[in-house]
Length: 176
Image (cartoon, rainbow, N blue to C red; front, side, top):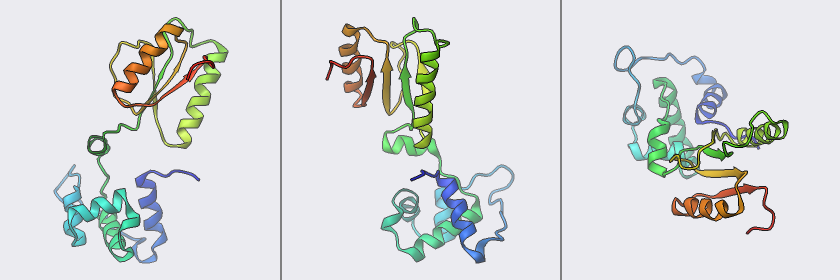
């Protein structure tokens, strides 16, 4: 199953509705104005909470209500604010890949390793960031780690556990 972004789902929704294919795209508040969730709620005649449910848990919303909200989003060119959502759900949508600085990124094995990670994460719409310094604090949803020495692994697990983030470890098969 292919994961779609909200914008892709909205575009598919619009094109699937014959009567809404020729939507004019008004600019509500003037040049450069970005519509808000509240604008969508007012246009659709529903509460802001209902709009949020349509975006985050559409299976909980009646089809007729969902149609009104999706049409209002299309008319207003509403794009959900990813930063606001990540704050609300305590998730960034980002995976940190830690490869120590003493490992050469130009090594063919390392390049294939990174390409494999990129391929797997892109299928699930997860961006990733390669980190070379484990002391650098960074917000993420989880870690993929390779190249650590045995004594560094427990330290990294403790670091990730404090942040309640999962760790995928490559290179040490005899560890839990």
